[in-house]
Image 1 (spheres, rainbow, N blue to C red):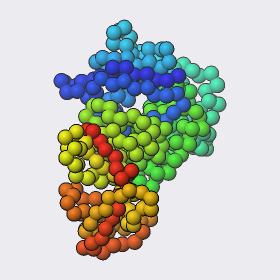
Image 2: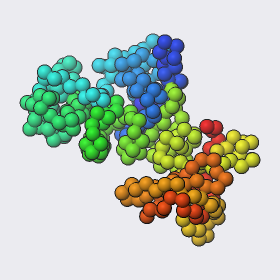
Image 3: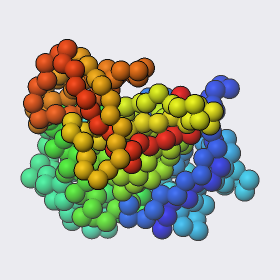
Image 4: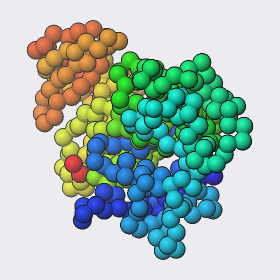
Length: 334
């Protein structure tokens, strides 16, 4: 069943945290709320979880209303049938791994076959041999697996993730990203994931919801968000963007032309109409698999970035070529 959000909004002390939002989180999909700190994504997640009360709107799973302002309905968090994985793991330090995972089953009085149910959940995250350990005896990645097992042991209709990888170091975060996505897919879960990390969002999601200043700016697949951003903020926040000076007609229409660094060519493209620019190379940055070339194009206000297979000395002047079909025009002003 899909999660449906209609007209949901929230303010704190007169400051709007979330402007009225309409969203559909599709069953069986991995959906990510992406945006900078303070954009409203965690507030939205907490309202779905039942940890914050909306000012207006409704939340439903299928035909069941979890919250409806007009109908005065607000299902308590513990009765919504949702799982949640927190940023700080939120494990009970005095409880064993087994008891941490069993906690939700016990509070929900679902103790039939408790032993086998908990051990099955631990087996899914490959921690069945650590059931009697305590959280302080586990690594960060193992603690995250316990938190995930606890969230899914109750067979939730939806699992909510509140920046669950941000407390891990970079190498472990990449490993856990792959592992967590694999677990979600294998278990056939519906996931709503909050992050400010665009790499997490782009690599894990079926659909991304980009937020800024309490507003939903764009919803789409990672490919749609990257290749066809609707908003200048989205274009800058997702990946690298290069901006062209707008022409007279574009300025009159409020149009902002942009392109991605990988679309700038060092040689003319056969059969494609291109613009050619004279550029000065400012810096070459080695990124391992390529060099990022930072340059200033003659007559352009903003500096550009392009990619090359070798270092180009600073101060070099050359021509670069931009296929016209790669220019994306945004109607939203900066």
